Image 1 (spheres, rainbow, N blue to C red):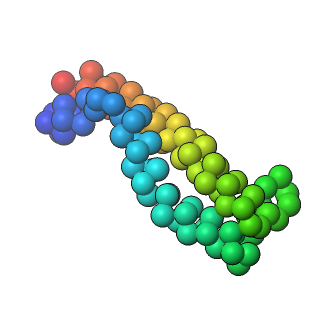
Image 2 (image 1 turned 30 degrees about the vertical axis):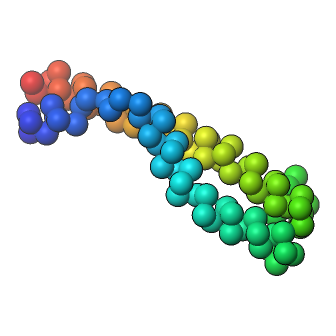
Length: 95
């Protein structure tokens, strides 16, 4: 238990950047596919409650992806920081 807590209670360097880049490269292929399908009129992009096709739909999808990735990154980073805090508390108790 002691080795486990010591190993995983340290926060990695540049965690926020690492999570952001991983999410960006994970979501980019799907958003590009969705953007092209919207460009050709196959699938609409919902923007402010209206369905958007064509160039506008393509741009909305491409510009929205980094914003969505940033939101997911912030949530996951906060979740990780809370877990790391609990591990540090456990480290104080058991080590």
